[in-house]
Length: 135
Image 1: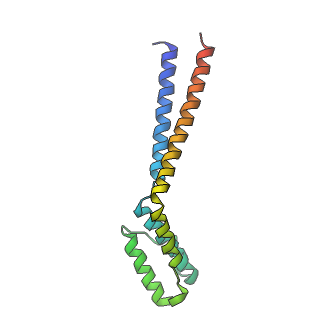
Image 2 (image 1 turned 90 degrees about the vertical axis):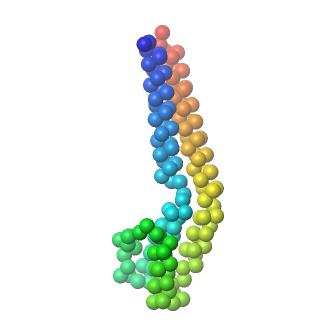
Image 3 (image 1 turned 135 degrees about the horizontal axis):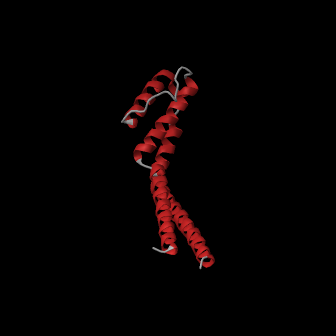
């Protein structure tokens, strides 16, 4: 095997590695209804903490059904604090997030593809520069 062929395989491996990293990053940021429900519950815990300092929102566990936990929290704190526990903005934010989920997913996919194309382009330029310097 010649040195240029080995170098081409190395650059192909680097490009494939970057694609795996980009896909992994996109998957971790990919919005799902479950993630959005967990975010809504965390925000509700923070809002409840504004009224009840005994509640520690970062220590509160999020179970397998964050929607049920959210409904339970809202019912409990509405019964305890009445109109002072106005959580409508959390529900509105959650509805907007669900409505914009397709747009958010498209933006994540576009960014992953654009960053991968940019890195592959840079790797191609580096490979071509190295080819020109070697015999």
